[in-house]
Image (cartoon, rainbow, N blue to C red; front, side, top):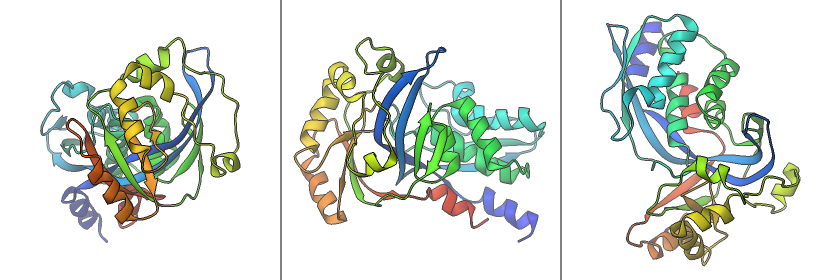
Amino acid sequence: MSQKQNKDLITNERWPAPAKLNLMLRIVGQREDGYHLLQTVFQFIDLCDWITFHPVEDGKVSLREVIPGVPEEEDLTIRAANLLKKETGCQFGVCIEVEKNLPMGGGLGGGSSDAATTLQVLNKLWNLHLPIEKLMDLGLSLGADVPVFVYGYSAWAEGVGEKLEKIELDQQWVVVIKPECHVNTKEVFLAKNLTRNSKSIKIADFIAGQHQNDCVEEVSRQYPAVKSALLALSKFSEARLTGTGACVFAQFDSKELAIKACKSLEIDGWRTYVAKGLNESPLMSKLKGC
């Protein structure tokens, strides 16, 4: 494929920015700078934002449509594109078009995933040839969840979430509920009663069934809607919180069982989704074709 054909393919395509789930989240310590030390397991699901990149001649980076409530310069796609330009001295510009499907404040990593897709695709579109390790480092400066979206595979994660080890997981069907609230992650991590001293475990312990999320108790206390969603979903399967929420999820052995549960959970104010767990990010799968 020629460089022009590759450029045409990238600019004429919608690129996925998938959601993630935290299948487990333990807080095992805290650094002197206040960041929490974690153990978590990331898996992707096939719910996605979609991003299109339109080259422009003036060298500027902009959004085709600004997300309400988020100033353009603070949007993570804009920050990611400008970070690439600053890091490499690239003079190209781009207008970024985002089809936003993932709920904000849900713990699915939507903004972080958008940033990772921007880093990965513009690295190709602008012929920057930065290695994935460098893109992950740049992503970490934008947010703790960005590196795993750049990495592109289900992962056991430690540190603040940036130390990643590939892990193969069952790719089950999931039901995701987004209750009618927006969780403030910073407030959760600042909470006085949040567990910060969980014992570290091994991957084998997680596989054996240790799925706790140390944020559940505090999030449920601050956000009764999350607690209600967990209780409702637990009638069908093990209900868990992803990240700090607000989204909760449960895994199912078949699509039919997931759909049946989802239909029973269509409650006013809740958004419900049926999705497939994936070990390889849809973005990574698509990039392999370029």
